[in-house]
Image (tube, rainbow, N blue to C red):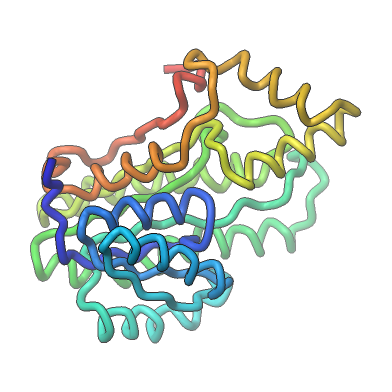
Length: 261
């Protein structure tokens, strides 16, 4: 199936590993020119190798989402080197595991800036060009905790949920301009982040990581972890011409794990 995004320019954040890498690779395989953004350039270069080996085009750019004052210059650099950004994939790192109560105001502000304000500001930078061309895709990767809060991930649950409300509001504003805005939500996908969270939970509950993993699998109807490429391919479809009538949606890639409607 031709997704119709060959030679479109995609800007993917957190592209050096995990879900960000998976989304970048899937877009690259479909012929998009992919700008790989993140703090660790060595990791970005590994992602670029994968994309280029599959016949795709990739470009690496060091980008720290905590530095809001660099957004315009870095975005301009991407436009200069690859062309106008048609597909924007917002994907930020997760905060440390914490309970809801007792966290410092400074921590909340820091993570709000990295995980919410940066996404909003970068998207605002992309929108005018998308409007001018009458086409655009804005995909924001969050967490299942934004739908069903995950214990001891209070900061993530709270901030990711705010992005759901923002994206839904944005989708209605941009629909007349040929631009879609959607959320993609991972369940338990086999990434280093999931391993880290399992290790943190195991330590907190004085259990083995293997016991935590086995317990988690019981809640997944498909009875396995998701593969990163399955998540990446979902993002690529949302970026496609075929997905032009999907906007304001929250797409779950979770093996049926999230229990509520």
